[in-house]
Amino acid sequence: GQQVMQIPQYQHVQEGEDFTTYCNSSTTLSNIQWYKQRPGGHPVFLIQLVKSGEVKKQKRLTFQFGEAKKNSSLHITATQTTDVGTYFCAGNYGGSQGNLIFGKGTKLSVKP
Amino acid sequence: EAGVTQSPTHLIKTRGQQATLRCSPISGHTSVYWYQQALGLGLQFLLWYDEGEERNRGNFPPRFSGRQFPNYSSELNVNALELEDSALYLCASSVGQGPTDTQYFGPGTRLTVL
Image (cartoon, rainbow over all chains, first blue to last red; front, side, top):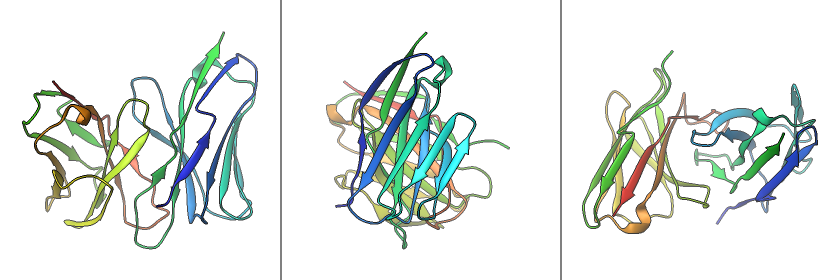
């Protein structure tokens, strides 16, 4: 079946360091979405990437979609304690499938 | 605008019982999705409903079922509960069923099976 692999599973950083999480699919994605789940919370939509090679920025967060639309990354510059949480990528394979295939998430902890 | 709501917040059942979880989508959203988030296992897709019809189903046994009502709210039923069904059950809604429609999640129902 379709799978979205996400690495690393955990990342511990010192406040001010950068952080990157990566997602890969074996087959081409229609689009990829990124979510953040704070401890004890529910996933909150961050962004959607649709076009090949697309790059989008939200303040310190940079999202990229690969040229082949099979991989994506989220990079956070100069992490802050408010960035703590689990970041999920979710791939959509298009057609009438509708549902998202979530990666297992990267749990980010930030040491002040 | 109210977000996705789910009830109850917590549910405690014993093995073999049945559980019913409820979800109300954002006003104007017709698609409802159910996910299971077990500890350490990420989000697993369960069911997708749109316009009252089941559109897709994840790799779960038939004892996981649900329905969508004419007002687009939805219900997830889990029969013959097993210990491993203990998880956070998340409902999400989207405005349509297109692949670029964003899903908005509710706060979840924490199901504990004893």
